[in-house]
Image 1: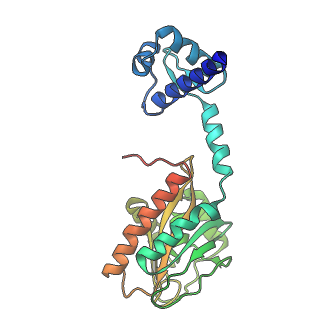
Image 2 (image 1 turned 45 degrees about the vertical axis):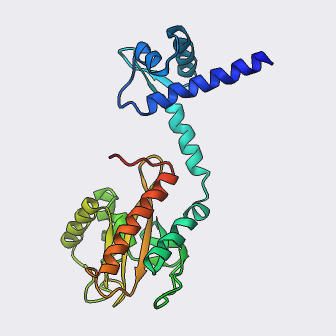
Image 3 (image 1 turned 30 degrees about the vertical axis):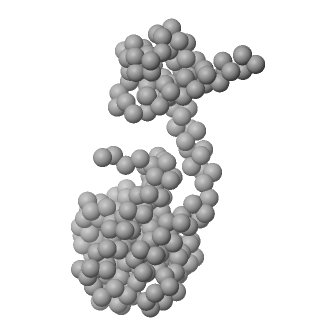
Length: 257
């Protein structure tokens, strides 16, 4: 029985070391690690050596310890195991409640944005969400959000195969104009559609990142807002960004301060 207790204590101490290194921007020496953990140096060395041998820690050239790639592999496996539909549901519903508008979550599939889940507001004019429908990238907020994080070469390739069709008189059809808007999206952290896909329809999308920092989804608030400068739309922008950040956190992504 005592032996079992010892194993649990050792595991707890090993996790303490991982916790300490997870908040350190650089590696820590054995002495620093032992001091921060409050363990004897010999105990710290034994734990760190075992974790290193299993790939959970790595030793830098100067001998300091840092987190190992095995932890990244574990995190990726956890991320793959998430049911994004189930995970995103509370955020979609909260966003719809806070904005009084409909909300959707979308992903990039080939040359289109595809929405795969939604929440409908109980107030205002109802808009039937286009679930499973392929939406153009250059004139929807979710599409532009995804384009903003694509490599330049891939974006250029997309529009060589698929010209920018004008859906309304507000649709961007110039690559230069689109690139300028994408740069603005990256700087602000959200994308806006202002009657570019459907007349009178306005939306805002914010990025949802996975544990590796890759943009996976776009969280969108959509409705017949009077104009993008109106108070209700400005509020929708703020809340959409906040909910997207919380969903990203739930997927394992950590935002830098």
